Length: 202
Length: 202
Image 1 (cartoon, each protein chain N blue to C red):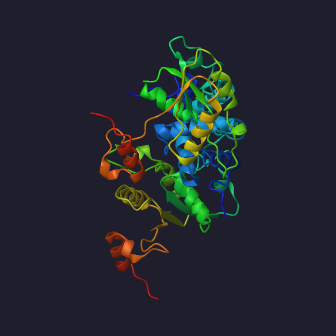
Image 2 (image 1 turned 180 degrees about the horizontal axis):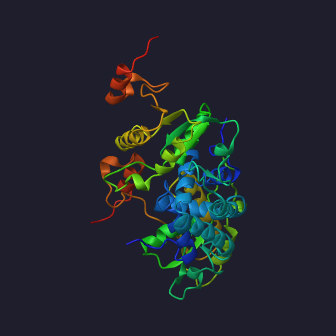
């Protein structure tokens, strides 16, 4: 049986909510709660305000699915973005990863997950119809499918490719191979075989 | 240079606050923020409210240092507690650990850390004077010093013992030895030596 650590409903409620944050378990949630109380003014109250304000103001972009206070989001609205190029990703975290890398200047489309027979996720559960709609834009020339290199991610990539075949656009995917800085000795066989088969002239 | 993940001030502010919670780093804070946004109504808003409410209502008990919505706390006020016994601990987390164990029925005294020459923590930075004050209560018979079994914890225990010598009370400490369920092979030498030296008749 889980025993109330503090015998105090408000604190217990906070700890049980904190323990639901991915990355925190019951023990680290207790530690976090105590730290937060020690830093009431510099951390706890600002965090409460930030959570309430993000819950209120941040919404998914109705075009691409990115999270922003504006709708459409700042990327969809930006005049500096290449509108002939859409990169399809699973999740907003992937969008952030590509933005941190800083080399992609096109638009995005967040589908919100992968097809998964096991988890019962079908095409209608993902934002693929929105992508097909955007694909009919005559300005669009290329769709880069950047779903994760997992089985589900690649299944989803194939499904999306099928859906986009009707349009006259290039459909590409990210290159697979040896990660920069990676040592061959530590790579899995699948990546090594792919890297060999996709070898490029020096 | 740290790159803004979302290019969105509100979200970035939330992520930077989340990353200050012990147990979360920048990457897990980003993941946590996305999960929170996905669970706005069941997790994010309740968490914001719980944080604000605990920040407002939970305070250290003016007698023992425990955290509670009431002052004095429910332990100090309880008629079921043995008032002849005070257990001295470093932190509220230690109080919770003892309460979870459920066997101690006395009162507590949280000193709020340990003496530490390295970190510049002196006796005046800890709530030791409050303990000395409570020790003059004629009802009190025993003080159990349950600071951690670290160098700083034990230094602090010795200092507290010195301060309490003037009173006619028993001063005890937790037993050291083999943890229940522990295997000798995995124990450190210090614990094994202590367990041997403190051996008890069968």
